[in-house]
Length: 131
Image (tube, rainbow, N blue to C red):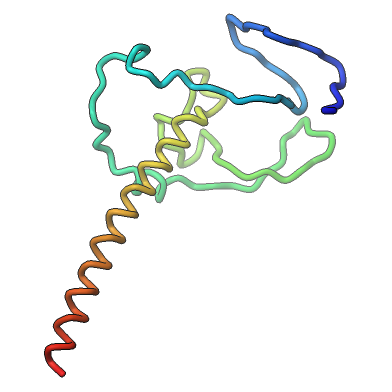
């Protein structure tokens, strides 16, 4: 039992913004339309996401109207935040853009790590032949 508090909504379709004050609990999954059927102008993303993340400052903060005054962590859109993750309303971020920027940065770091491991292997092999 989840313990619904005030609102019981099933199969609700929000055609505009859905704004909630307080926590949101749900069962199931959130789904982002990701099929080619929903997209156009598809091209490989060539930006250096590692540099974008390096330039992104993370902060510790409390929300002004939070009665519990819990500490949160994240970006402040007016400060050191890449423009592409700031939502059109200029008040929030796109968590999808943040997720995929982080994913691309991780891919870049995996590729960099693979190259470094390969260089180490080559140097170790050279040292073996010198001894």
